[in-house]
Length: 237
Image (tube, rainbow, N blue to C red):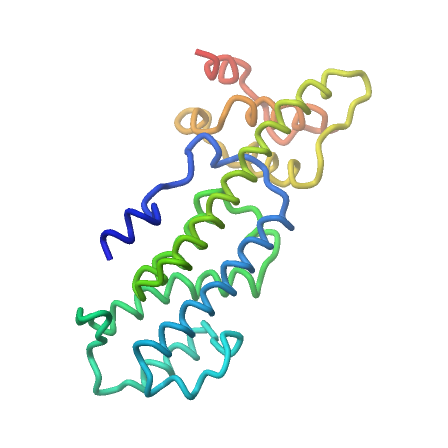
């Protein structure tokens, strides 16, 4: 498993400078939904390979459900069995349950996707897909572990593109009468302006994002809060 962890780069985290970059909700949802489908495939093939006595209960990956009730039923079925053998290595079944818990959070996010879920930062979204990658590693499913890594990288690339777009739109914001900010920008800016602690964590937000959020805030008929200009200047130091 350790070699697969290294090959699939599961421990490579999302870049800190992209955490607060606005991303389009539809793009994020698409990646999360694809990740959930991948998790179904991982579990389906893992069960057929290592839990053959349960395999006849699942005819296709779409039948795999990661709701808490369904998962509890699955483990209750194995009452009396405490270990699972994977490629000659014995694993406690509680380890599998632990891996699935992260996928259950992904399932709930996809099934109840709304403003709150869409507004989470990059690290939170990346963590959801990372749970799928960890499940693949548990079942020693290298192909799908790599696929999960690809989905994580696509999420990061989307954030990176969003940062570049923000830089371009800041230039447009200088033009008279410009209204450059789109709904996914406004959603992120509103959260940043309302919640940021200028005394402690404002430097965690990239200058470009901070400057764009300031521009949006000042365009409002009534700004949400006063924005200390020296804090923006500090980002350039």
